[in-house]
Image (cartoon, rainbow, N blue to C red; front, side):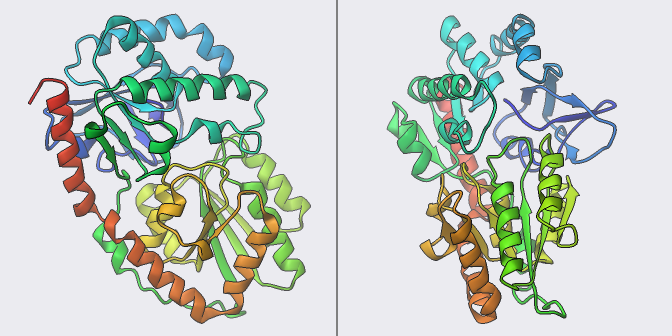
Length: 383
């Protein structure tokens, strides 16, 4: 799989895929879970350990970037083959570079595998989301590998109920599963719905997303905040996340005159993100691509109303009144302004958001994980 894994000393950390949030969810059904992925050296211990009881990590190296990836393909193939050939159950998460290589090995070697589809590469490498010079090639490759994986896998799990299933249909309909892997603690649902207003009555906005490319709509959100201030709508924006494009977004904020109105927090441990979100009035996610955004579901569970783009699986949980078209700054400004001027409507949206998040609670999803894991064992002949 591909993921945001950081190596600090001997520990592998992730802000999103910690032991409790990912690996441990399979340990009720499997004696051993092995995560095979790349990790990247880091000085700062941000995130939580991904390993724990019955969960280990096999490091494929730190090859980042097109050139480093291409030159390391032979070594990656050898390392992946050694892991895949002996694994009783192979589960590959798409899209991703490591996923594509693992698929190649399984197809060539006749190895049975299961797939998870967590995003749509057609959107991820779209013109608005990515400006990489090789994005068209990447889009072609990852759309093809994701499509082939869904067709050839013995089981397929999607993080959406319908959207990704339509884009990348599976051959075995009886072995299709559609549910999110979000990790929502019970305490999230107990967060007070009523936020203490700012002294000036302004609206506190928050966004949680990595800044590796333009797919999360950071530029759109910054422009919307600038336009709101031109209309004398008092808003403050907090951005949680980091990545290669953070300097670009910081420069944009400064050029728009938002230095005193936008706070770049950086990466925050997953368990602390909810605390930040609960201190804000509105979660805004103007993405150009999504599967089923976990950060959005966490905000909803915390009783923070959401405005998001109508992409990916988002329309499966949000009503039309809470969505805008991707890239539509004017619509985003209008939606935020409406809530800034009507606190009763904001409160109603908060209540609706929490109710919509209830089916994603930990106990409900863990029951679905158990059914899913039973199917994995059966499909791979280990029942």
